[in-house]
Amino acid sequence: MMRMLAGLHGHTLRRVRRLWLQYGILWTGAVLVGLVAVMYAWLIDFGFAMFRMMQRGHEWLPLILTPAMSALCVWLTRRFFQGAEGSGIPQVIASLGEEGELHAKRAPKLLSLKILAGKIGVSFLGILGGFTIGREGPTVQVGAALMFQMRRFYPRPSALLEKRLILAGAAAGLSAAFNTPLAGIVFAIEELSRNFEQRASGIVITTIIFAGVVALGLNGNYTYFGTINAGNDSARELIVAVVVSGVLMGVAGGIFCWLLLNTHKWIPAPLRTLRAERPVVFGALCGLIVAIVGVCAGGVTFGSGYAEAKGLLTEQTQLSAWYPLAKMASMVGSYLPGIPGGIFAPSLSIGAGFGNLLHMVFDHTSLSMLIALAMVGYLAAVTQSPITAFVIVMEMINGHALVISLMATALLASRVSRFFAPPLYEALSERYAQPHH
Image 1 (spheres, rainbow, N blue to C red):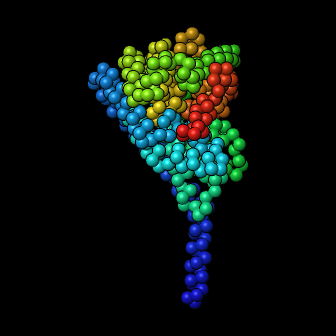
Image 2 (image 1 turned 90 degrees about the vertical axis):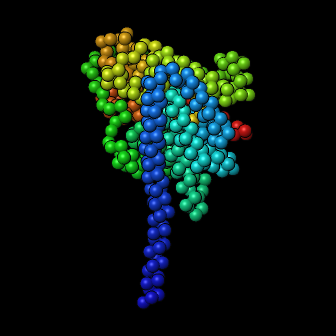
């Protein structure tokens, strides 16, 4: 009897262990991604609310606070968290793109718990200083890092399994950040893994579901920008809006990519030397530029731009025609020092500003439709991932009525952008393949 019970107990333990290896590790990691994504969002919102409170009480304070925070962020990133700079998506692409020994060296360095902590902590300091950065790109690296760490619970994790975990974590991070599950799947296929495997789809979808359920449980069911009214524009007005938005946003987004990828061609030589030899001082200078732009613009260029974009979409905010250009200048100034921070949300805000600008010319066309088209166009031009861009924006605004228009604008803008620069994230990811990384 005892022998039979012992055998039954052993069988149960083996079955539990098999279920844990097959499902438990993946589900636990997905829940962690959802929890961390939501808490990170709360932290960034808290940080920017603190900045706003200080800035409203002392409107000249950013001229001191922003350069000081920039210098601190650059020093921390370079001293302790190399690999946490920027949005984090290039690091994920680099980790997924390497094979053999290179993958074994690159992924643990770019997706470590130390980098995860630095990404969250330093980007919080950045938003506390009023930088034009978003949390969505960093959440992709955070999600990938969390899922990559789950490999420790597998007895013999292979490189293929590690890549599937990274892909799933990154996709779930984007999905939880925007509450856009379809966009998470498309992002994994289009941007992160050009040779997406069918076997990986189950892992990606499962991780997105569990992370999304956690995010929904904590934040409730919401759309990122709310539901917009698509308007009743004629087919002719819609075609003109798509073509104009696609071309203009393609040029604007392409110029932005060119600026980020070709700093040696437009930054004066003394400043390039300063950037290479005294990066903390260069960071403080960039912070001062961001602060000057923000103060001159009345404070609207500080932060990710979420409130401004939503205000324009709901027609509750009036912004200057110069807003998108000022925001773009602030975004470039926020990126150059090399501190952690994403470009998704600021890009959507710049696109919304351009949509508002277009409405000043095409005043008979629906404002919300123009803003939606400009948002998807600018995001597609910057990322050169048109499918991801239109799915993200469609889910953000609940804009299924505009799906064809969004698709056409995204495709046109991404094609125009390629005349100016190659795909931004892929080009940046190549820097992590260099020996010094």
